[in-house]
Image (cartoon, rainbow, N blue to C red):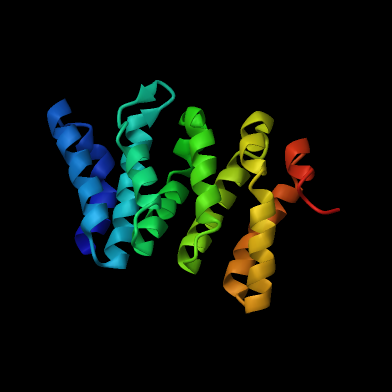
Amino acid sequence: QVAAVILCKRIGAHYMTFQAQTKAEFRAVLLSCLQNEPERSVRRTTVSAVAKLASIEITGEGNNWPEVLPFIASATSAPAPEARELAFFLLEEMTATVGECLQSSFQNLAGLYNSALQDPDQKVKTAALKSLGMLMAYLVDEEESLTIFSGLIPLVLQTASGCRQLGDEDTLQVINDVLYDLCHSSSRAVNAHLPA
């Protein structure tokens, strides 16, 4: 885990000195580490390193890491709940990159969130809620972009109802945070889904 923390802190400066082939190999190794690391805390730290690298490689000028979104999509449909949860940890860490540079993928991402909000595993559902909440808060002033994700609000509310019945206070707090941010949106699409 210490190595992953150091990697996360120093990746930006060193990565920029790599040759193109070395960069490609490094990115592949990072995704492989995420996929194969059994220790949760190491995976979480590696997620931060991947997100930092994504912010370097995926910019308004282009996507130099086209493998990262297919990796996330694949992880969301993996049989292991840990892999599905990891995909949403990564999306949460990449909120700014996704919000600024990956608008063309919003429809696909909305589909991933839709599935995850109905996942039988509560950790997956919670990770998806947090990630979706961060993204919607980031997009709160972007009417067109927010409209794509606003259709997920009924699922968020349904999840809240289920959590209330189960006494799941932690997930309810996440949902409350998401709804608080959305209540301040002037988006008609969002307000159409929120009870008065």
